[in-house]
Figure 1: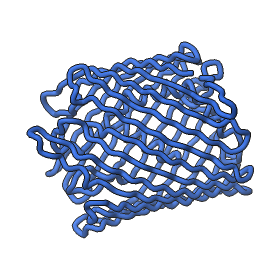
Figure 2: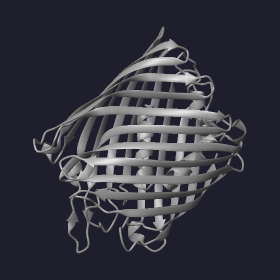
Figure 3: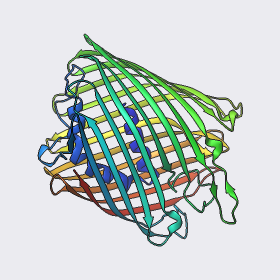
Figure 4: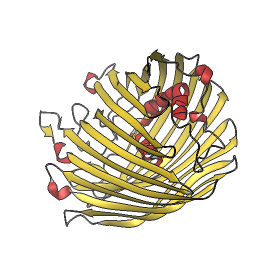
Length: 434
């Protein structure tokens, strides 16, 4: 589900959590990227492996060895990140800055079987602020993932997880200044079937998510109502790829989704996304996927205008040298708005990232992106620009260092516009792993 991964990265980058989290993730990837590579060892006509991106390249001499326990390997890890944020409340005026410590313990348990796979993961993100203790937060997640190898080219993958998530202050959900950051809990599961036969690849995926939002509290003790967002989301994907050659494949993809809200039924909606395009590899210089199609969303509330619009998605990776990977991605999708008078917003974003392997254990990453959000049912448009740079250095298999900086600028317009703000973050991370 590459499109979901890139969509999540784009949302994180523009939400203001991208700087610290993405830099720390890059540090972790340098240490354990070979794990994912090993899990996908079989080669098919649909693989694009002329080049391996810098952040996915395995370096066995710096890879965490883990702790072997019979048929399992345990990978413990902890990251400590000291971050300074010059606008912790995402305010348009009177910005307040603070330094906070991010503590991220994590444990991954993976099977060592020759066929099939099973893994379990648990982690937490703890933020401790120096001056504003009201911003102290704890997030956590647990999940289990399995893969059943039905045949050489036929697999069934499943995942079930639970997480408690903090909504960043940069989100539109903060219509008033909540005393403490808002949060929600999500229970999610998905199942994916992949079958490759001759020149055809068939992918069928189903997913379900249940999100429960907790109300906040504003100054004076009044509640900031958020539980109107409680919902169950069902999604499904059917995709067919046809390989014209080992380097080019055409695809047709259909996504369907439904949102059912627990406390505000007239917020319910259902939609489709139809895409057709090409997945390709141009020798060792470039790989990519480009799709165009149509996106629809129908709302239960007749006052909300149904969406029907041209759709596109693109991801291109250019390898000017073996040490540099340049990634350009563009996405379009509908997301829950967080506003009670608007059920969703149409998000269009473009992101450019360059990763440079200066040394085998030293990677420099820089990114810049822009996003345009148009809200349904109200007159509001948000334009956000994000940029960042990170330096990630592995001393050995156990210790890694990361230095990162990010900037987020948001400009909101329209009769129902939100806050305009700038937010800069800089941090230094230490990762310890086995």
